[in-house]
Amino acid sequence: MPADQLARRIAGITGPGATAVTVVNRSSLNASESEEIRRTLLSELAAYGVQQSASDQAAATVQVTLSENLQNYVWVAEIRQGTSEPVVVMVSVLGSVEGVADRSSAPLTIRKSLLWAGEARILDVAVIAGNPDHLIVLEPERVGLYRQQNGNWQEEQVLALIHVRPWPRDLRGRLILRKDHLFDAYLPGVYCRSSTAAPLSMTCDDSDDPWPLTSNQGDPRAFFSANRNFFTGALSPGIQKQTNASAFYTAAGLPRDKYTLWVFAAVDGRIHFLDGMTDQALPLAWGSDIASVRSGCGTGWQILATSNEDGPVDEVRAFEILDREPAPVSPSVEFQGRITALWPDSDSTGAMAISRNSETEKYEAYRLTIDCHR
Image (cartoon, rainbow, N blue to C red):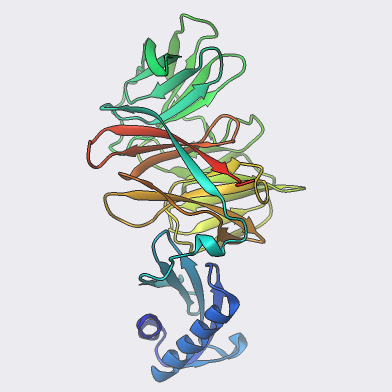
């Protein structure tokens, strides 16, 4: 029984005694369902000697978050005792999320369009709309430029990517389209810039400058760790007064009326919300790759998030966030391999997802957009 399993793990850390327990529902469960879970959990805790108490009289505090991933519900307990670092335990509740999308307040659909597939590893792709359209493909050792002809991408030019130091094992890279030249490419410890006109050339230099999180020049930039696969958390420029976040893998901005809420998929396994003043962390069961999309559906912007489940396949789902309360608003879309990158496209109307197909072992690049069902 999940409630007994979680209660046993909590009691194993707190021991018997007075404990302040709160239950927060951040899943698609309704109020009566979450309340029933709360009552059952408190009953199971009492059986282990853990008695519910007011926070000012408790030796420990426990916040249980009812969340969900793309397959199951996940119950996460954050346990605090005195000045010690919090301890997080969780249990997965199998086979309970069928029909979640039908209960969403704004059912949307994620559209997945294959852009490119090949044997070489793909770090990022970018589409340049025109007549004809062009596609830029960032690989570890080169940048390929392709034009669309008769429904297919035809190679137009290949630019060598020069770097002195060897790449880290889990290499990541980012393409940013520019107005005064075609593109910039960011890789760990390296910055590359294209020329302004065809035939293109590209210069690459060692650089520890921050990477842009979006194509918007005014948005925050973040410093990438040259020897690892994540951002250090240092921001320049920052989010208003906040110039540091927890180390993170990816970030997504959600414009509000008077500010932008930034969401970080952090290395600590939590999702951090920064609004320029506060940093709120939630133990959400998302993967390490997120991207915001300006769809015009629902609240106007959604976050696409990968699954945190292990296995040969991966999934992406759309979420909306109201008052720091994420809610799923679409069915999941499946990939035949793990997603290795998820970046917003140049105008944030979609996202580029890169995966390695577990059957063909080819790298595949998809553009993800959101359909409103209007």
